[in-house]
View 1: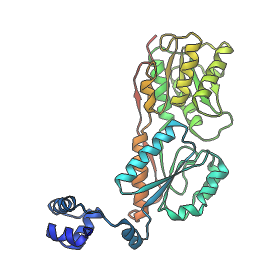
View 2 (view 1 turned 180 degrees about the horizontal axis):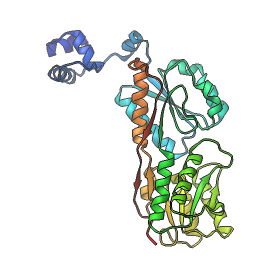
View 3 (view 1 turned 90 degrees about the vertical axis):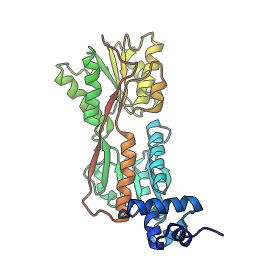
View 4 (view 1 turned 45 degrees about the horizontal axis):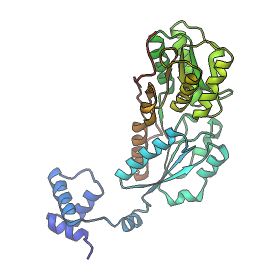
Length: 336
C-alpha cells in the first residue's frame, strides 16, 4: 500500500498537520521537528500526492517560460537554469518559443494555454514600450529582458549599460583604442543593443576616444553567422581596429572566426570580448573573455519572485531587480 501522511506522522511522532507544514515548506517549524519529519519521509519513501494537493490549492504546479529563440544559446541556457530552479521548488516548466515576433508574443499573453499554468516568466523581443498595457495580465507574471521597463509586472534584468561599459573599459585599460562593436541595431529605441551601445560610448567618452561609426558592425540577428558576416564587412571596407566587442558571445565567436580567416591573430592583432558568458565561450580557441551578466541569479530570482506572487506572499508594487555582473578573463584579450 502507498505510504500516507498518517504513516509519516506516526513514525515521526507529530501531527498530520505538522507533516503537511514540513512538506509545504512552512517556515515556522522547529529545526529538530523538521529534521525528524524529513527523516521519516526518507525512511518510508513517502511521495506527496501532487494532484490532490494542487486540486485543494487551486494550482497546477506548472509555470510557463516564454523566450524568443532556443537556437540562441543564451536563451537555451537561461531556460535550463529556470527549469532547474523550478524543479527544486517542485514545479514543472512549460517552455514557449515566440520567435521574437511581436504578434506571437501578444497572442501568447492572451493564450488560453496559460490557464493551465500558475504563472509566466516572459522574455519578450518584439513587444516594446508601446505594448505596456498588454502586460497587465490577470495572472502572475515576471518580465525579463530589456524591451519594457516600468511595466505592470516584476522585472528581472541585467545591468546592460554598466556591463557594456565595463567590457569596453577592460579593452581600453589594455591599450586598445580602435574598438569595433558587432551587433548594433539601427532604429532600435529600447533593447539590449541600444543599452550596450550606450555603455560602449560612455567608456569611449570617459577615455577621450572619439566615437567612429566606421567601426560599428550592424546586424539584424545575433547568431554566429551574423557576427562573422559583420566582421567580414568591416574588414572588407578597410576598417582599422585593434579590438572587437561582440554584443553577445555568439557574435564575438563568429567575429573571431572571420578574423582568423583574414589572417589576423586573436588576441595579438585584435582582442575580442563578448557578453553573456555562455558555456561554449570557455572552449573556443582562444577561450573568449566575456561579461557574466548574472544569468544564474536572473533565473533563480525570476522563479522565486513568481512563486511569491503565485502564493500571494507579497502584494507590493512591481519591482525592477538588477543582476550584478563581472568580467570573465580568458585568452582572447591581451595588452598592447
